[in-house]
Image (spheres, rainbow, N blue to C red):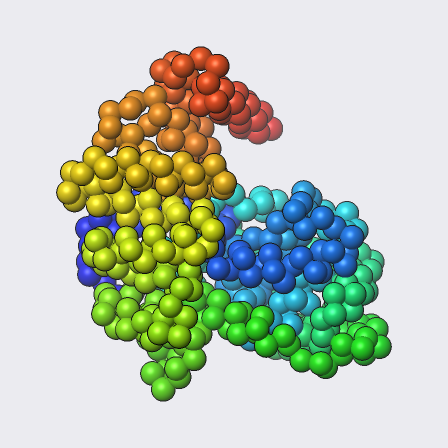
Length: 461
């Protein structure tokens, strides 16, 4: 696909976001954010977290952009899925099984041991933006999102390293969580069999586990199957609603990370399932064929006219195809139907900013500010929304708030600490002392000073 086929504004946006992603230190990783996927993670996670004795409000589940078949848990009660795992797993029970395993690590207080010092994920990419198209055009192929990650060290088909004893205990704990939550645990076995297949293909000896940091898949399957088969939910099948939701999310992800030709091969026109239509919508969008993309989505909206995630995607296609007026109505409804989801609201804010840029209408910028501030108040981990707010303040000539939004974005994306510090200082000098915004600017000043000191200490080592 040729990048030139996108509008100038989209290419500029893509280049800016890519720079934000690739600029940090080589070991940074990219998070993929998508409203529908994050809600799905919450819905499958809550019963398992409760079964594990964890507070669902305290546990976060995130998606990391990488083709690796992987997942891991860290300190702070965070679980990370790699996008490659969701692409590879075609059954929601496999995802539930992996999540149960990782929650075993969280409940057990295990800290992930990153290979070669790989840092926790810090960069953030919105799945609701097809900026990966620029990288795909550069030859990244269906590893498009992976190209946005630097220093990925994990080997395909295995979890990051825990001790063998921790892995064994965690497998058993995960099996118990699945049973308590009433989930069929056969997906856990299916997943481990996939890993076992990878080991066979890579010629890893099944008896050479002494120096391994976790039991080999064959050993884990043997230990798990006995426990899981005792569950009354063994082989009861996947929840049909969750399975349908997962298939659509998986189709969306495949459409996002894959070359259009590969997506259209995996989901031919004869396939009229929701997953196929969503995947093809992304493929046609990447091919700069918005009418075909919209047709796929309209076919789904006929039966689900108020689905916020379909409305969001329709608005996205319209917006990124330069059809700003047509994008705003579906995005407005998507925000309303999703109870003001901050990620979707961020895209509406973007559409309003674009409308203001095209028409010079002050009201569009005013509404964009209101929408974006409300979205960021609920979820500040959205660099794209901060970028849109920067545009609003730039057009208004509000230098202190422009500087604060810039500092927020640079801090969130691990941008140049000197630039972030300078922006925060500019904001603090221009904002009224004692206000929440001034206090936040002061916080960022101190944070960036500490970061620079840490960098200096690291350079002296």
